[in-house]
Figure 1 (cartoon, chains in turn blue, red):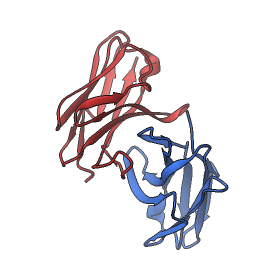
Figure 2 (figure 1 turned 90 degrees about the horizontal axis):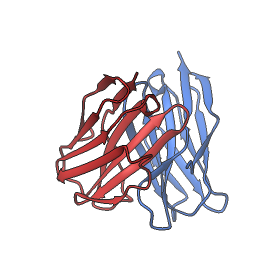
Figure 3 (figure 1 turned 60 degrees about the horizontal axis):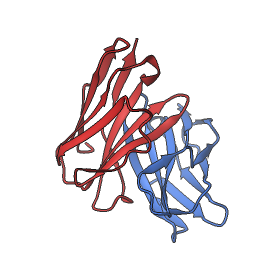
Length: 112
Length: 114
């Protein structure tokens, strides 16, 4: 079953602009992870944020987590054409169940 | 390089045939996960192993699916008999030492069942 739900499902912006994707989930979590998937490829891990963290940065990526609202956001600053991909949030349950539960993803298109 | 090799990368077979997907995590890990990705259902966890032992196979859709991990560097996912609705991309991923750690995915096997 789906845990994370990304919003929007698709996003198209101009190169150089910032892209923001949101993720909502339903149950308590141990951590939340963001992954990128280029067309026809595997998933690449971007950032892991734990339930006791509120914000994390990695290069041009910024992730926030609001456990009271059960939501997270991924911000990509100064977007590049190479950022074109699908982005997924995935949660690790706080109830002891292992494995990632993925949302359906946001398809991001960066137009040059 | 995520340290996970999957083979074959593409598989086309006919309904009723047996299909075996292979995964070789080439770096150290404690956990091995199998996922399936379809347009309709997205990414779903099928089964995972800890130290080669299957821990949770509740995501395996039917008895037609089975998975093994005979050693720390090799796992298989078998579908027998295959059906058109099994068409999907199958990924394996490694993590460790904790199951809550970052997962590193292989490139996937695209399975088409005609």
